[in-house]
Amino acid sequence: MTCGRIKCFFHAKGYGYIEDFDGHEVYFHYTSVEGGNPVDIAEGANVFFDAINTGMGLEAHRVTISKSLSA
Image (cartoon, rainbow, N blue to C red; front, top):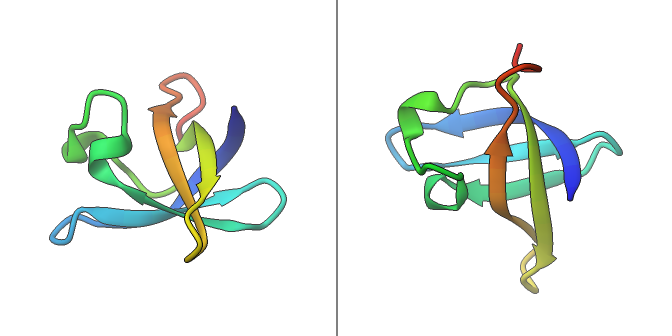
């Protein structure tokens, strides 16, 4: 799993971007967040995730928000 931080999340559209600690932006959809509750998704929250290359770029799967390390 990779560590990162939620850079931005568009609640109305249901997607956002995670910035990993190497500076890469990774797309994610709220359905890939464990629990899948978009209300819990906050910019700056630390996350763990698996990244796959979709051909259009990196996409995060199995995103887990770290409750103890959230900003």
